[in-house]
Image 1: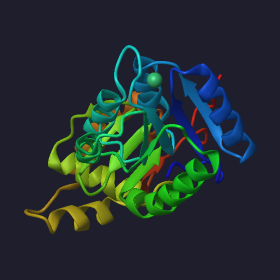
Image 2: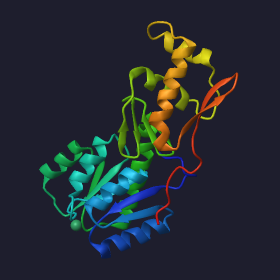
Image 3: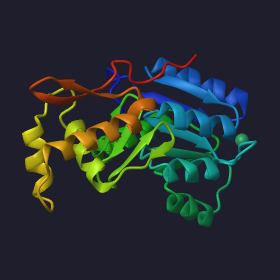
Length: 236
Ligand code: CA
């Protein structure tokens, strides 16, 4: 879950504006922050940029269908819960959606009470799943998959660079000494020199630059990963 003072951000992708308006209004009244996407392309862009806490996707969306939006969401490694709303009732469709990475689905007409109950259940379940994902501003780390993204672009890292980044990310805003790095990295294979640590840090700095998350040097003490304060962009 993105750290945002407990406020849950939901992306609602629904082209039926009457339905979307009703759902968004009810969800906002329940304290959720809701972004509304009118088509699949907008939904796809919004998910990539804002990484909300939950996505509600209509299956029949103009531009890009809900199942394609979902497929791309999972392809980017975003593990946020996705709830599909659909007019179709075919069982094979439901199976296909679950295969694509949907967490739940509702068949129209939608009952607000049921939608909110499903959302609460997904959020409860999602907190356990998303512990393996660390979000630092625009930088997202999948700890189990050992992959990093800035917004929706994957960051190309070597195994050693990943280890350094992981070590720093798990101790964000805390100083890590060169010796700690050498201890943690050398146990993996051969010994690591102080120069090698510097080399990994400088490469990571270049690769992480677009994310706004920076690796600071504290002279004589070591390094720390500085996560930006502003973590989630507010909807316009
Ligand atoms: Ca629709």
